[in-house]
Image (cartoon, rainbow, N blue to C red; front, top):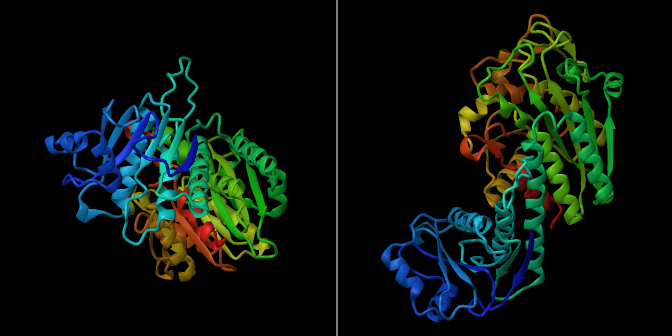
Length: 492
C-alpha cells in the first residue's frame, strides 16, 4: 500500500473516498465541519436522522456529495465525546480501514489524525493510523483456484494541518510495523505442510539477504553437538528436521544486543500425548512466537533502527511416531538440567529452554521470549492481553508501557518460587508439567530456571496471536508491542 502525509484541503482533494469523523452526539470535528459546510449540511442531516451508529468505528458511506471533490465521503463514528481516548481513536481508524479495504475505490484520504486526543501527540496519532490502515488492508494470498476480484484502496493520504519530518517518520514507523505484522500473519496462516521448520529458515535467510543482516541456521547435527537434548526430543519423530534459526542485526555499534527468542512449533499434534481433533487445524499457529521474531526483524530492518538485535527461533514440528518422546522419558537440556517429560504436549518449554541457554553467549542487554505456550493463559486473560512474566521489574515496565502505547497490551503475572513444587520430579531435576493450577505461571517458572544470567521476560501469546471463528487467522501480535519497545530502546 502507498501512503503519504498531505496537508491538502479535504474539500477540494480529488480522491475515491474521504474519511471524516463525527461524535455520537452529532458534534463534528473541525475538518468534518468544513466538509459538511461545502456539502450543504448533508453530513449533519445524516447524523440527525440516526443514519450512523453511535459505536466508535461505525461507518456511513455517502457518495457524490455536492461541493466536495471526493467521489465518496465516509463518515466515521468517534463514539461518545466523554469516552474519547486511545481506544475510541483506534476503533475509528480500524472502522475506516475495514470500509476502505472492502470498497471499490482505489484511492482514499483519511482526515482522522487531526483529532485532539488527551496526552497523545500528532506523531503518535499518525503512527497508529498508518499501522491500522495498512494492517486493515492485509489479505492472505490463499491458494484458491478462482481469485477474488481485487478491491480496496491501494493509495491512502493522511490529512494533517502541517506535514513535518516528525510526522513523515511516524508514518514510516507505522507502515513498517504493519509490514512486520503481515509477515507474521502470513507465516501463521500457511498450513503446516507449507510453513515447515525449513520454510521458516528459508524465510529468515531471504530476509537476511534482502536487508543485509546475518542469518545462521543450525541443523539437527549442530544442535546435537551443543547438547540440546530437550529441544531435539520434541522434533525427533517428524520428517521435517528441526532448525534453530539465529539472526543478527547490528545497527547499534558496540552496545549489548536485545535478544528475542521465539517458539516456532510449526505444527503441534501434542506428540504421543495426542491433542483432541476439534480445532486441531489451529495448531499451525503454534509457531506464532517464532513468526513474531521474524516479523519484528522485518520492521527493525526496514526502519534501519540504531540498535543491536539477535533473534533465535527454534523451529520444530511435534509429531507422534515410533521415534517420538514418551511420557516418563528423561532428557538433558543444553544447560545440563535434566527434565522428566510427563506430557509431550507441554513441548514449548522444552524447545525454549535450550534456546534460552544458547543466547547467553551474546551477553544480552535483555532477553524476551515469545511463545504460544499455555492454554491456561487463554483461560486467565482471554484474547485481549498477552501474559507477561519477568525477572526484572524495569524490563517488565518497559514492555507494559509499549503495550499500552500500541493497544497491543500485556498483563504482568508472577513467577514466584512458591509454585516450584508443582514442577518436582522423582527422576530428574524437574518435570515439564506443573498440573492444572496456575498452568501459565508454572510454565513461565520452568523457563525462568534457564534465564538466570540476564534480564528476561516471557510473553505468553496463546490467546492473542490468532483468532477463531469466521475471522480465523493470525493477528500479527505482539509485533506492535515489541516494535514499540525497540523504537523506545533505539531512541527513535
